[in-house]
Image (tube, rainbow, N blue to C red; front, side, top):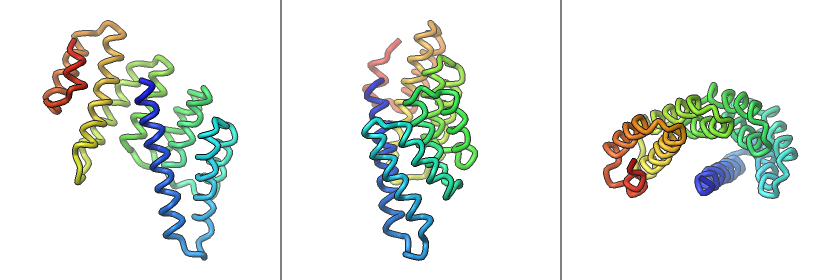
Length: 191
């Protein structure tokens, strides 16, 4: 589980690094708002690495005040709030991101917050929405998204097994194996 959280955080950090670099590279000197957003995002990422979550949240708030149409900003704020234990606030913030763009990463992050709150059915529903989002993507490397879907199926299976709902967990495992027959991770989950 810890490795999955690190993978998610690493993915967000990479995303925001790319976002910040692309923003910096594409922005003309006349568009200072986008530069300012990128500056706050970069600063927030540094503060987050230093585990200065309150300060990082403030930087993201500054970026949102400049451009409130970027779902990534709300998603990052939700992740920071989750790290601070502000789970109810994280849910509201992540839902704000999802209203802008219903992304797989957004639904997965929401599921992780619900899991931490022990609201397991809401977590399962969020993970299933993330799985369906990955299924709608037209991409060059489907292997990456299949791996992400496998991780989501495993999260669902773990919740169901933890609730002693082994029959349902077996059904999810069978579906996941049907979609990903070569997955060692899924085969190791035999229930």
